[in-house]
Each structure stands twice: as structure tokens, then as C-alpha cells.
Image (cartoon, rainbow, N blue to C red; front, side, top):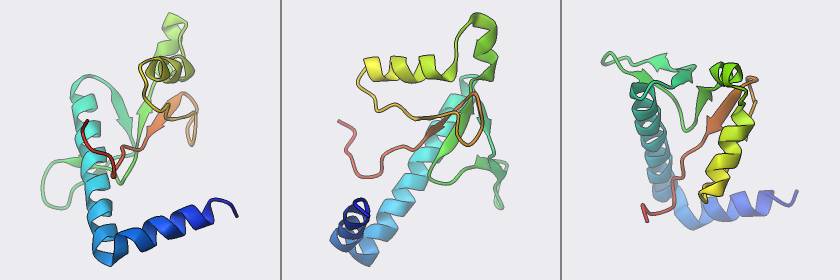
Length: 112
């Protein structure tokens, strides 16, 4: 029950227009990051084909498959810990798929 007031205040603070804008930015950020990482050789799971072009799209989050790291003695947890070392909030690990990171880019923070 403790998280519900936070969610409620976030929605109330933004209002209908702000909530719509934040949702759009969140989806845009996730798709941008997923595409950039995909071009860098990372396997992005569960992206759906676009209705208007050849792009593969995700919602406000995306899942990176790190299962190939096991051949080097590493895991998705090692990646998450290293991100923390650099001050990034560690993504969700091994959920909903084992050996993955679920990334949810921020929608309310500036680039700085």
C-alpha cells in the first residue's frame, strides 16, 4: 500500500496532458535505446514489428538477452553490478526471462 500514494501523486502532479507526454517520451526513450543497443550487437527480445515501417518496437521497457555471457563466466548480474559501479540504477535481472536485463529508461529526468 505504501507505493500507491507515490503513483497517485505522480499522476495527479502531471495531469492528463503531462501523463500523456511522459508516456510518449518513455516509449520513445525505450525504443531509441533498444535500437542503439541492437545495432551494437546486443540481442533485444520481444520487439514487435511496426505497422508503418520495418522497425521493431517495444513499449516503455525492453529486455536484453545476456545468456551468451555464460561462456565467459559472466552473468546478467555482473552487468547489473557494473552499471551500479558507474552510478546507474541497476535494471531488473532475470525477469521475466532468465539471463536477461529488463531496462526501463527514465521519462522524467533530464539528460544531465
